[in-house]
Structures are given as C-alpha cells and as structure tokens.
Image (cartoon, rainbow, N blue to C red):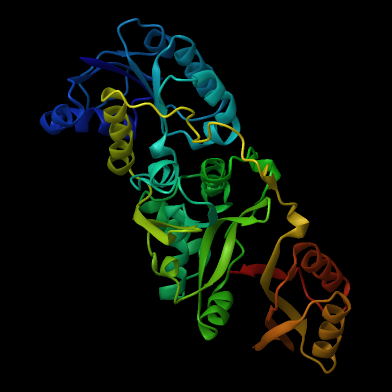
Length: 419
C-alpha cells in the first residue's frame, strides 16, 4: 500500500482525492499498488470540503508522519511551501507538486535535495497537458530549438474574446472573473508572471539553464486595445500571450509577452481557456501539445499520474533531466540582444511631416519600417500603427524613448513583438 499526504486540500486537492477514489480500480491496476490518501493539511478546519479524509492544520504532521510515502504539495506560495517540501525530502519522502512559483525560484535547490528521491511536477505547467514528460523523456534525444507556449488560460480567454467580439479589455476581464477564469486580483495572470514561472521550468528541462523571473523579459496584456486587433487582422496575425524560449548558439532567449503571430501557425488557433505548447526539436521537428491548462480536475489528473509513476517504482534522477551540465554551457541571452520584429501604436497629431520625422528617427536607429496604417481619431489626431523588420530589443526601446520626446506625440507609444 502507498500512503499519500496532501498539503493543501483546496480545489485541486479535493479533486486528487476524488480521482483516487473514483478510479481506484484502474489506478491500482496500472500502478500495481493500492494508493490511499492518509491525511490532508488545510488552513481552516471549519471550511466545508467534499472529502472524507483526516485533516490537520499542521503540514508538518504530514511530512513527519513515518507511514506517509508521498507528500503532495498543493498549498501554493513560495517560502512556506519550500520549507514544507524541503522537510519532506529530508525525511526521504517522495514529493509531487503543482506549484510553479516554488519551482520558478527553487527548482535547482530542490533537485539537489531530492537526489534519487522521486520528485514530480507535471501539474506545474499547463495543467493536464503532459508537457514535462514530453520534454524530459519523449524528446530527450533532441536539442530543443524553440518552445512557444500559450500557458495561461485566463489571458487566452481574454484575448480570444477581444479578437472575436471586438470587446474592450476591462469588460472581458470582468466576464472572466464572473466565470471563475480570473481571480479577484488577476495581476499574476494578466501581467505575465504565471506564464513566466512555467516557461522557466520548461527552459530548465530543455536547456539546463537556471534563471529567475527577475532575469527575463515579462510583459502583460493590459494595454492591448481593439485597434491592435484591427492591425493584426489586417496583416494576418492573431495576438496571444506567449512564453518563448529559443536556442541562439550557446545562449537561450527567454521572454513572456503578448505577441502577434501568424494565423497560419497551429498555436494561433488555440482559443479560449485552452493551453497550447509548440516544441521544436532538431531531429523530430515541431511537436504540438494542446489541452486544458487549469481547473481542479485537469490539474489533479496530472498530479495523480505522477503518484502512479512513483507507485510503480519510477524514478527520474535528476528531476530536471540532466545528469551532467551541457558541454555547450547554455547561458541566458541578455534582454537587449533579443531580436524580433515589432509592432507599434502611436497617437500623433494629424499634420504634415509627422510620418517623415518618425521614419527619420527609426532610420537613425537602424530600424526599418515594414508596414504602416493610419487610423483617424477625433480632435485632429490619428493612431499610427506600424510594424518593423527585425531589429534588436535595445534599439526599439531607444526608439520608444525618442518618440516620447517628439512634440507631436500624444501619450506613451505602445509596442508588441511579432513572432
């Protein structure tokens, strides 16, 4: 018998208990063991929960309990979760977690602590999509050339609605909150931090690189308007919040931001709350992974699959998939050295000479304009929408600062990258 302790019996934790009970026969047959939940830890014992297991408010009762074999960490957060998981590993207990924030900051420390102790985290990225197993095992023969992922269902729901129904951001966000897709405080999702944590986990498995959220480019979706979708549609693009990782020689480029992407690409067709991740290997080519990225049942499904792997006697050592460092010694590419095409929206005074001065400014910074649209606005003003050929991030940022200084520019120019 395998005894499981769950630290954090919320939506996902309840679903883990439900799956283990409802699908007991097939789970026991596939694992070869009887798996039971021995105890759960919660913050509030008075809150009604749809589970029939012993509960405690002390997570250390679970990690210190000799009879418990697997600790499932679903409490969220970083520091407290790290201490709980660390203690579980020191007690030689296998660990399963869905906590992407914990792994974004402490994955390498936890890998060192775990050693040969099973440590699984499939549910930490893209919910029910088995992307961790695909990268760590299925694609292990390949150099990973690039990863492009829609990894946040809240943002994808909002952007899909804005694109298809021409609705403003604030209204769609309110709808997402009413439907339970967005939190009361949605900052973590809509500013790109959730997707960034997930991208960092994937980048460690793909490239063996240790980077923190503070080290990479992260931008959210709050400043996107219907005008941006108008331009995107005109030129055959969709707008998606993407997590992007690319191998550039012995450097890795990591960034999360709203992106104009060709409607012909498979990932552009991923709509609503669904997640989609494209992985390009040097021998396999492009592979695509699609499915629910959040929700109690989908996330719990991934948690239980990890429990089954451990019950079978499976070990993945080390947990991030590298037995020794890559000879190439992959390093994080400086943000300034990222190269991309760019889209800009600039509110200008509608008078002669404006376009010429903007083109001159861009030319002086070695930025070539590819296309341009002008949308009239009231009071003798116009929205100028333009895209560039590929250039360096440092040059486009310099251009944005110079644009703000021009006397015919109203407000702050808005920029998105084109993939």
